[in-house]
Length: 634
Ligand code: PRX
Image (cartoon, rainbow, N blue to C red):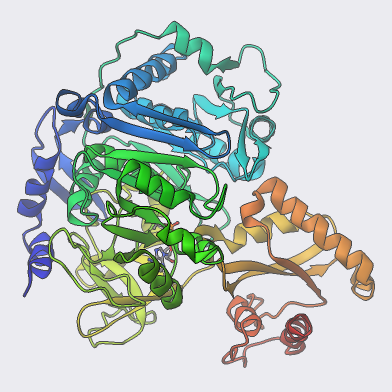
């Protein structure tokens, strides 16, 4: 057995001793008294009794040795800005932000919602919350007022941070009107809204509620705000994600476990070293951005790049030019981004000096072999797939080259990472599948390792009911992904078992999109499915039944309705959730008991056999969909 397997085995069989060692990589104000309290499964209390602070570990602890080293490198190809903050400067900015939040009445345990573009201030806000023990909830800037409103409602933030606008491909995308509308829609109202004015768009100001960051920053220029020592189990943040039901879940993360998990992942998984540069191209609104733009690299004493812009602007070489300029050693992106780059001039891959780069990590969606080969040959660097979820906060499956150089296999994200006792379960019986190549549900035996979700915000019951099943003597967490494992322990992920789809690495609930489309007055019923797409991995496809069936014979009216429905989705959820097409049918395929046959619709759209249809109520329903698909393929 190699070091990788030893490491993994020890993490499961000698769990507490293993994690006690990993916990030494971070600074504690008070050492934990117990490594893992799992007396009330599936709730795990990691590093119980310990006290620490996420911001202290990300910034303050580095001031002595690397105060003048770059901590945050903000690059915007949208506004042509490039600014480096050293650890000392980041420390000052975060204290100004922390003092501003305190002045607005934010206290330990209060929620602060962050709805911001990819700008440095967004990271100051996250770190400032962590500093004072407030719980941040970042909402992806691409979401619109409906999505935002449901998150405001659930998180009930005391303060919301936002900005006048973001920018995408040179086009200004206003945030403030969407935020105002979301606050209007929500029954919870924040006390204050703290605004960054980038000078991109005019903002309507609500007196007594809205305040400018520039004026508070000025006021608190020299404030000293010490880190608030919090219990290891104190929630650091919530991050909303989609599941089977329409209502997004607030994934709640702790402080101590998350800090330890990230600290250990930087050298062991990403092979990152203090003083090096990490470039993660995700968005701070997603979990990858939380863990590997902000917290992970900073905890690891690295410099981190926060990039606002497209991968193709000013040209498809922009990311590689940053690798050269900032001597990036670790890069982290998503397969979709690489598929976008694949359409650009391949010469751009060899135009820059990429000698600093050790590896490119990809995650968030299946990595197809042609894309992996293209980028690996183009860069001449190892490409490392890793599989995880918003819920887990850090990789479940990958190869840990920092522990032992391990071969990657095309199509597989790798093996179970230390801390994760990964199993494949029979979806009917719940029994563990032990033979190679058997297809089952990817599951993790409890307790989940440090860094994973503690619970669903405000809803312990939902946490237990959604994710956990009891198999004799133990509780297991379901990832809701199908998978198989080969004889060497490599897993292959085969797609979701639930109604979640993955569009360009963005996780979306089809039920949420259906609910949004149902908001259009002409729509009686709708089914949304994810359909394979060469560029985005999957796209959403909607099939709607209209209240007025006669419209089915009026192609002009249908075209107009399709546009209107897309607008409804844009306005409520955001363009990320917009279906690629909305098609109209007279009836949807359902079972006799009225259950929508989404899998069958999906299969027909992808040209696959829809399987057993004996329970289908009206077989003509699927034929209508098949005809529409055939017609559009012509
Ligand atoms: O279906 C899996 C897919 O993305 C889901 C999690 O998405 P999200 O919560 O946004 O977290 C992304 C964190 C990287 C998973 O349930 N997924 C994620 N990574 C991979 C993947 N599918 C295949 N291969 C991957 N590497």
